[in-house]
Amino acid sequence: MTVAIFKFCTSKCRKNFQHKRNPRKARWTKSFRKLNGKELTSDATFEFERRRNIPIKYNREKWSTVVSNLETIASIRHKRESKVVLDRLKVDKKVKLAQAKFLVRKHIAVIKSPAAGLKLAKKVTKKDTEEEMDEVEPKKQAELRTNAETLLDDEDDVIVRQHKAKKSSKKNVQFEDDDEEEEVSAQAGEKRKILENMDVDEDSDNREDEEEESDDE
Image (tube, rainbow, N blue to C red; front, side, top):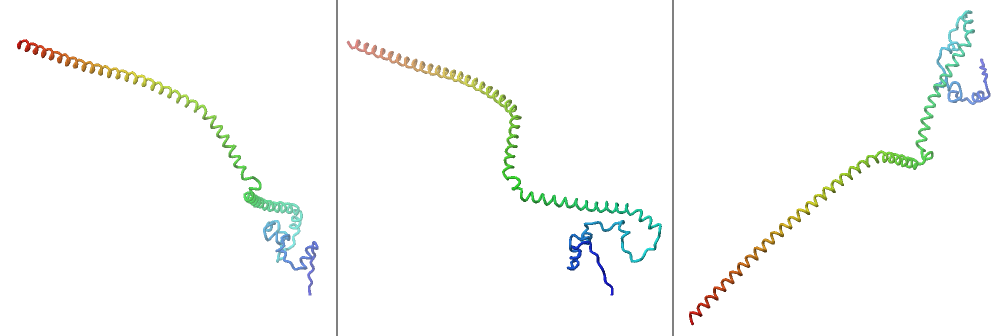
């Protein structure tokens, strides 16, 4: 009958072994960390510690070279293990940064009030409008000057046209008055002629009457 003797490094390991807990399920054990890729597992530096089913023949030269190079092998293994840890931490940093961004987007109202953007937008619009006004003012002044000049020219043209129209209307009135005077004078001349003819007829009638009376006597 063979009896296996285990030597535990700490009382924690001994208690977990007595409770028959699986070391591959506890996150702090070496077996769990190697299974989940948290530590270096496959590397050439582990070849000297690897279990072998076939015994290796002893060689003094080989043994002496391995013993003399143990320190360099240990330093190489330490560097490679630290590189694996740093690579894992880089990935973890990216994940944590993405989680932090998600939290900030979700709870942005706690960090920044919703009305802050409106105030900034108003300030920006005011600045933009002021700059635009500064740029537009000389253009507007030039446009106003040109408009004023055109208005003055138009007013002068209107005044000249009105003056000409007044003159032409006065001439037309004068011509109409002259025509009316001519018509009135012509009518008066006709009336005078008619009256003269009437007087001539009366005189001739009176003369005939007188002649007849004289003949009767």
